[in-house]
Length: 461
Image 1 (tube, helix red, strand yellow):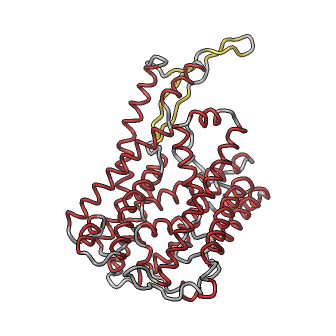
Image 2 (cartoon, one colour; image 1 turned 90 degrees about the horizontal axis):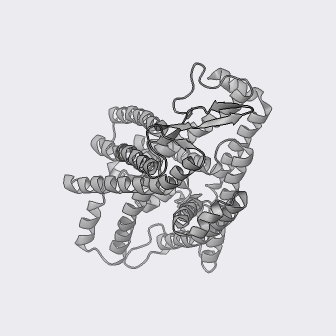
Image 3 (cartoon, one colour; image 1 turned 120 degrees about the horizontal axis):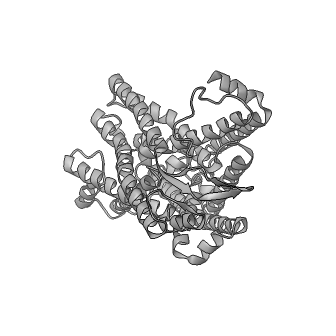
C-alpha cells in the first residue's frame, strides 16, 4: 500500500489529478459552511440533529449537512441526480429521445443539455421549499410556534425569497460544473465524489452524537463499530458480485486465415440497480411521513396523527408497527430493484445486438430464445440481490434499535449516516476511484494496490 502511494507521488500527471480532485472537494466542503444571504449564522449553529428527521435528513445526507446549515450548497447535487433519473425514465417512454441517444456524441450532448435545463427547474422548485422552511422555522406557521426565532434577519425579509432561490440554484449549478471538471481533469466520477465527500463530512458529527447520547454505553458503541465494519465487507461483496453469461462468436477472417474469435462473457451485476432502489424506496416512504408531520403541526394536535406517524417509525416501541415499516420498506426496495434493472437492461435489444454481430450464448438459439434466457437470468439474480440490498438498508435501523443508541433523538440521523444508502455510495465510489488509480499505475508499469492479485470482480472478460 505504501509503495503504491509513493508511486502515485512519483507520477506528475496522476499526482496533479489527485491534488486537483482534493482541491475541488475542499472547496465543496468549505461552501457547505457559507450561509445564504440573510440567514443568521448564530441561530444556524443551534439547529439540532432532531430537525433532520424524515425527508429533510435524507436530503441533508446527500448535501453533506449543508441543508440544515441553509448553505449556498443547501441542495447539494441532488437536483442534477433527480433530473438525470427523470430523463432516464422519460427516455423509455419517448422514442424520439431514444433515437437521439443513438446518434452518438451529438445526441448525448443534447440529452445532457435537457438534463441541465431540468436541473434548473427542479432546483428552483426545491430551493423555494428550503426558503419557506427557513421562514417557517424563523416566524412559525399556523398553530406551530417559531422553532428557531431570528433565523432570518428582518432587514432582508422583503427580498429573502428571490435572493435565496437565486443563491441556492447558482450553488447547485456550480457544484454540477465542479463535478464535470473533476471527471475531466481529476480522478474518478466528479458527481459521485461530491456525494461521497458530503457523506464522509457528516461522519464526525454522527460519531459525536453517538458518544454524547445519554442512552449509549461504550460496549454498545464498540459493537456498533464492529458491525459497521462487517456491513462494509458485505457491501463490497454486493457491489462486486456479478453473474457472467458466456458468449461465443463465429469464426472471423484475419488476413488470409479463418480464426475462431475468443470466448467472452456478459457480466450481469447481482445488484444492477446499485443504490437507486434504496433512494426511491426511502423517498416514497418518507414523503407521506413528511406530509403527515406537516399536517399535524398546522392543523392542531389530533391524536390520529401520532398513531399514523408511528406506523412510519422504524424505532416504534410497539413491535408490529415497526414490523409494518420493515415489510413495507423491503417490498418497495425489491419492487424498485426490478423496475430500475428493467430500465437499465433491455434483453430484447441485447439479444438483437448479439445476433447482429454474430454472437450467441452456447446452447441457446439467437433471437427470441436468447432474450428469454437473459430475462430468466436477470430475474434470478435480481431477487437475491434485492433481498440482500433490503437487508443492508434495514440492518442499521434494527441494530440501533436493538442497542438502544440515539433513541433520544429518534436515531434517524445515525441511520442516514451509517445506513445502506451511505455504505453503498461510499464503497461504490471508493472502489471505482481505486480502479482508476490502479489502472493509471499499471499503464505506467507500476504495481497497483494489490500486488499478487487484482480486486475480485474487476476482470469481466
